[in-house]
Length: 233
Image (cartoon, rainbow, N blue to C red; front, side, top):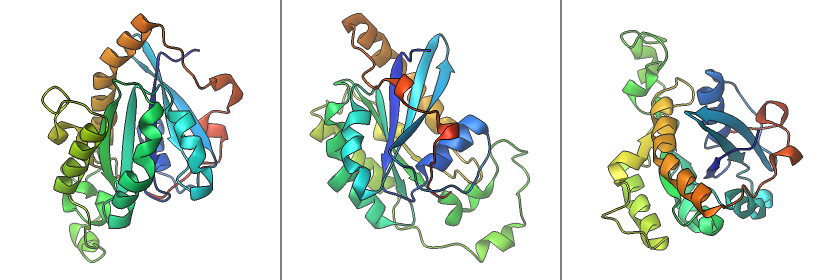
């Protein structure tokens, strides 16, 4: 099945890219090992088939990132809300990899592991929203300090628009494209992917009009279910 468009997750190791993808596609959280190279899922969204690529955050696989980004309709830049360095790495190390993405590429900036810091992120997304998985007090004692806030993500998003020479007036608003998520509980995960997919459809249609090919041959890769993949939470 040939995908109509491509979404790529980028970010440092251990920010939870693989866990986010597992939570969305398989509706579960699992402990994982670090991704080697890249892995993907195919998602049907309306009449369109979208490939979602999970990429390795390790330094030794860094060069592969631009290959996976080639022709991408959307890039999800992922950081850990408890790690300022993981946000810094997005700008310093990963943003340049998106040079090979579509000129109309949609960007989302995502702070994962919100369950470590934010009480509302303890609510399981797929279960009764009026009940916590555990008593709230048991979570309060394990909270850690949030080092990156949504305002920081919006500031980075605006830098991305400048870097890509996109008009801030016509691009999607940062408030709409910046998220805090928890792969562990599912908090905001569906909202993230579904927002990205909705924004991606016009890009896919434009790519079809221009006859742009899907430049990563999926036949040469195993699916994510059969590929070692990772990052916690």
